[in-house]
Length: 112
Ligand SMILES: [Fe+2]
Image (tube, rainbow, N blue to C red; front, side):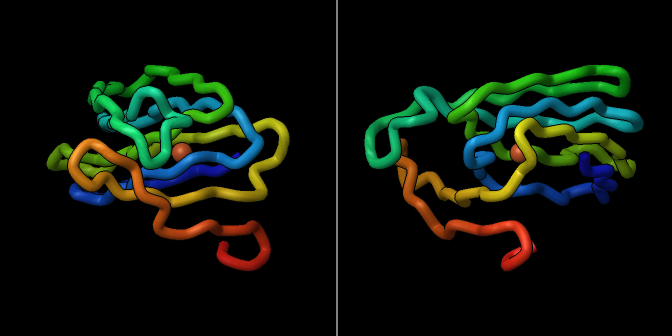
């Protein structure tokens, strides 16, 4: 589990969660999540959507979920994230037009 504090303007960038699925709960403030669909369509065209999650909101996600979580507000936010199985890898992406491009592949114990 990860307890994360978010200053206004901080974000994760687009990433997946390797072989893990997960969920997060917003404890304080509001977080915004941008998602891409279909998530497995690296290199192909994707659609994007953004949703806001206020304090008390729970967001669950499955395998192949790619998102960018951000604090777009003006006050700090706090969230708690849980993964199963344990989070051991994440791939970072950028959107180029409507296509995902892999930026890096990060491993637990090596990159964080
Ligand atoms: Fe994430």
